Amino acid sequence: MGKKEEGYSSSSFWQLMIAIPGSIIGFTVLISALAYFFGSGETAPAPAAAPAPAAEVVTKADENIAPVAEVQVAEAATEKVEKTGQEVVTAVCSMCHAAGLMESPKLGDKGQWAPRIAQGYETLVKHAIEGIRNMPARGGNPDLTDNEIASAVAVMANDAGASFDPATLKK
Image (cartoon, rainbow, N blue to C red; front, top):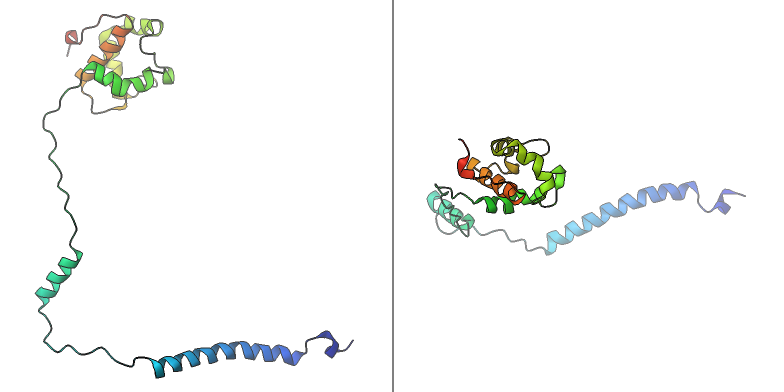
């Protein structure tokens, strides 16, 4: 078989290598020429009046980028309203104690609470404030006051058979 029978000759390869970039360059020149001859050709008109003072330009720019609304933040309450023990149990303690998560004693389960109640009210409150084993300090809510925690401990322990009074806790 000769070269002519293979389909491509060496000269056709080089012709292709010249034709492709040449056609790209030619197309670019054609588009540029069309844009030059048929484009608007007009330049932006010069301003007839004197330019506005810099202060006016800044004001207009400020108007353009001014926010749509303003946020006003209310002042924080200066006086905290203490929650009752039952409110704290419902909002914080029940997350774990209702289901007995992380080995916590279930609400109302006298068998699980009996050894803890035997330790005494002050010890239970201390553990609730400081945290013990899997229980985080203050039940994971640092905003709770010592009185709120003491009330919540009394509610949970009393539901399991204790007779704690939060008012008797030594400060």
